[in-house]
Length: 537
Image 1 (spheres, rainbow, N blue to C red):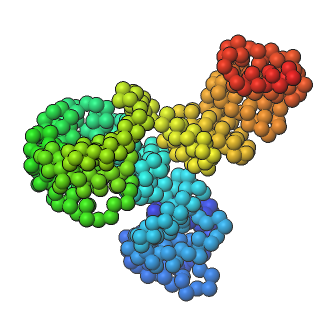
Image 2: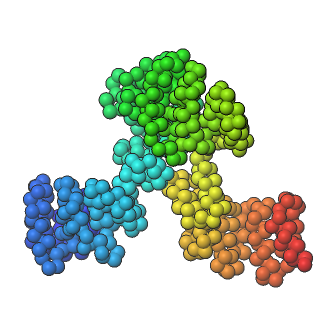
Image 3: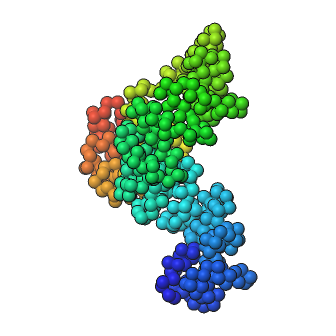
């Protein structure tokens, strides 16, 4: 077979048969040979017409159907593509390229759940499948940023020239406020591109450098494409507001808020900060009245609740307490956990002389305030999370574990492992979760990977030892535990587990010595105290 055709066939979705099998099928099939000749001549419609003859055959070529399905997708015929590829999806296992093209067809038809499932199956069979890219882009467009970044960042690392994928991954990182990941993805892209500048400005704003954001964005505003104007202006307005130039924020947003409630809210807050209270009311009025006439069930989207909250607040500031009241009541119903809504509602009710109701609202405000961490601690935690986003994922994983949601914990830490590919912590935690799920073979594989990546890390050896111990491979566990203690003699978790292992194998003397050492290092170690008490008993 002409080797120049292989990339062409791969792009068209040829199933990944061994090359010898592909050669045999193609060389012996005149329809396939004719279709390939048409493709070489850049005659895709002609190739489709030739391949359509396969569909009337009793046992059509799988290679031909796969090629036809891929060409149908490229030609904008997704229904025909799914029809051609459906028989190949029933194969065990199906080919990853077939799954990928079927996913493209389903996505084109708006069958997003099915598309995601087909893409995911393709990735499971072939991790380097282009389905990783398409699924990542699709999930990112649906604001599923964690899942999208877990797919797109490894793809961007493997294909750094794929600028679209890198920008999409960087956008997800920015939305998640994962500054190190965003910086890594953006660092060597052309810095004069408006998309790159916009994402850098978002990074700078997250890092608390609004002047840097202004310097990055200001030169881009006049030359940026029309499609980017709103996003650029919103970032500029945020930077202006952060440096106390609210009037400039109003200027860059003027004329852009008529249809978008989130832009209207940003403009109104800038107007309020610049002393234009009546202008802020005018900006919010049509949105607030529309929201107030709709249902008031709690919502995950904070924009509606914030619009009626600030509109009611601005009305109250003008002394119109009666007019403000229904908007503030609506704000507390839409978002009952927002303390500012209850505070403003209480003050407005007090202004109307309704003291008992005001006290109830203000008590709710105080109750929510007590449950919040202090502003200084919140800032410290935010800074820590910006500098170490993997720590956030680890905390979320432990939260799932504390709720006995171990499958969710495993999914979350695996996503983080895909993103933070050079960080050992997600690997170690994945191994622990798999052990708790009693999926010991998988846990051992992960532990082996950890030891291979960091052979001098006692935590990696400890993990593998705990897996061996769970599998009742006590000799192997003891070797790992002792090696971990050689590297870190005060690794108390290893000492505890080695002591338990020695108790089970009858070596109580060394076990007692280990537990006593643990309590010497950490007198509050409840596990060591309990094990020692049991041993003495």
